Length: 275
Image 1 (spheres, helix red, strand yellow):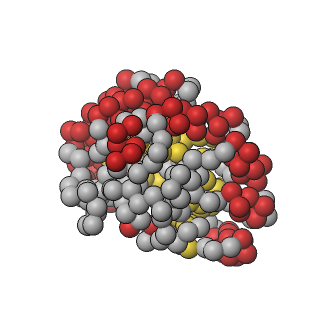
Image 2 (cartoon, one colour):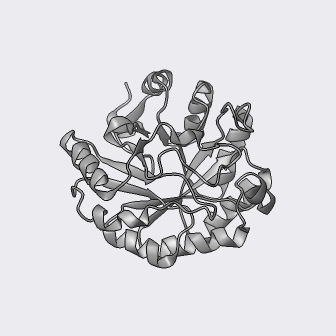
Image 3 (cartoon, helix red, strand yellow):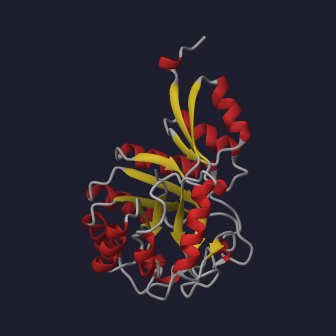
């Protein structure tokens, strides 16, 4: 028998209805990245004004929820118009955590969100300029992402970079190096998901994703396996955990059963994996 004191910890994030994803643009997105085409916005709750946000926030709190992701589609500059809700965020129930996904943002707008009480900033990081332009459709360069991280860090709010497997190797390795250079410790690892109507016909292989985990671990970054990944890759979940990854979003029941049998002490959190 393995004592509780000697069990390895595994944090499992299952946001579900306790921590819903909110889009302030519905399914509208002007950026229309080649790997998404706004299709991934379809599963989010649409709010069109501050009163709707407050009503939803109070509903989440009344049902013992933990918070929400505030995001949406981007404009052609890669920005998500959530800052206009800053004054409303000040009035949501104090027991809720807010994950703000801003895209590119000015320092003043980032400060406004920080002052509204958001709990963390999620930020996608890319460094391959060719793919920034061809896949993300942005007139940006690698240094723009460096400036974005500086802006978000300067607010004092927790910043959680998201790195995605499926872009070029240079994009991933240089993004990891940028994150490390900024003194950030926690990274959410995502992987492109096969999506009809986009350029993604199949997910990256297990080995490609495992190599990505190794790269991040070698840089002494804390890796969380995020929710955007091919959920059919059950063995991948187990392999990542065996490699020392101790935080994972929405693992399969098969993986949970396996982890229990392996003696992991599982901590369940009904919230976004950035926390």
